[in-house]
Image 1 (cartoon, helix red, strand yellow):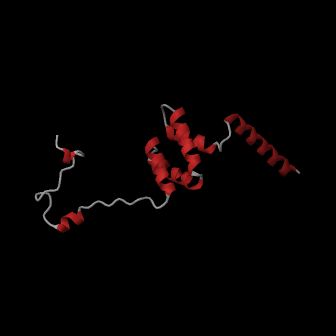
Image 2 (cartoon, one colour; image 1 turned 90 degrees about the horizontal axis):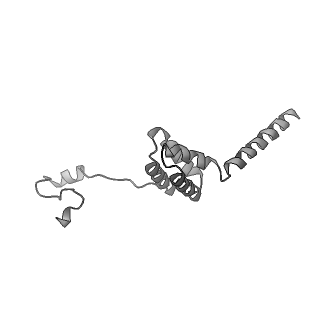
Image 3 (cartoon, one colour; image 1 turned 90 degrees about the vertical axis):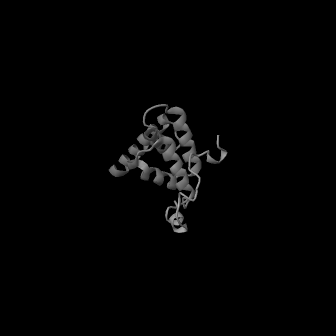
Length: 121
């Protein structure tokens, strides 16, 4: 096996290009993410196979929430959701704000009760 061609990419030879300008024109540039949260969002998108129409939401969550919380939610999602749309489960986990689901519903009920009492008094 040829050690120089491990990526199955052809090595540049005199036949592949005609001039230096051909090399410059055909060069592919990859821009690195400007912020660390963008890199994290791209990782979440890749690992959870997030569809195109939800990618902006992933970027927003990664920008607004701490990286540790995103990584915890990502790991929980991969561990608990074995099949189906993992990205949907990720949004449920990240929206949970660290509370167990049974405690979260009690908190929401208390918030609704307090809002009702404020409006009526």
